[in-house]
Length: 120
Length: 257
Image (cartoon, rainbow over all chains, first blue to last red; front, side, top):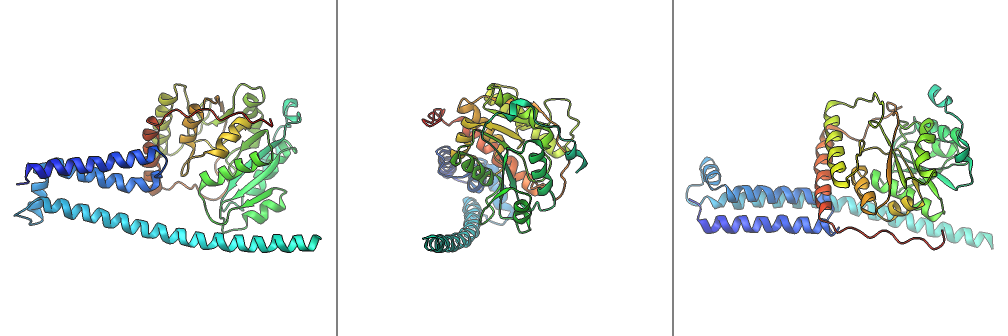
């Protein structure tokens, strides 16, 4: 069985995560696009923490006999990995766009300079 | 093409000397962009047509330029929100008093512009939105999309305490106040629903005008089945969080206007 303290801590921590995410969106510091995956993570963790029988049942399914909260760790870890992978793709895209911006800006500056020299 | 040829001439009020701009966001619309520009010019040649090319891979920019539009090319795809906001920033920077937004795919008929402009020109509204559902529209979107549209219009109507029938319409006319608001702040992905709520929070007056929209002239809608799930989740989340945002103070009046 899952210890009650683990349930309480799990629920509290996941709820705190959700509240922090919502507050960041409200302040305009986190875009909805990047918050959705985090929110899903929070909701799944709250559900798994609060639903004690469910956690025990799932633990039983996957063969975790001694300590059901291990499933909580596994699920949490999985979601964190997904979020990280998602961010890696986002960073890659931003890098490409940043390169493009720098190139466009440099070419534009050169052109402006050339045109100014040509007109004087 | 035949429909556009029937575009009615502008009513006298529109001919008044108000510096006006037509903002046309377009991504890969080389097949329809020429007709859209021609339709606006035929309606009122005094409109400066600005096409925001949102990272097209086709000849959209070249076709638009050849058709007489000014083209702002974004270096990469920003999404509709970023593209449209670029247009409003252009309008703000160049001192336009009146802006209309029509999509580059040709679904917004320039022939509807007199009706759309009327509430703004008469000073009744800061923003007029062309609604497919406000009047006798026989527009029937696919089932799934209809659910989303109905849901958001109910939700938004509740939030802003005014009946809004079409929260996803990108067919809009705005005065200087509207231009200033959207140039300063505009939602990112699938922006229209949130923009409506934003307009009310800034105490701008919004009025819906019944319009007919055409089927897309070419290309395909940016909203696919998979994306619609993200659409619903993102917009719902934004609306929910928006509830807890403090009411923003109205933008300060410009001194030079």
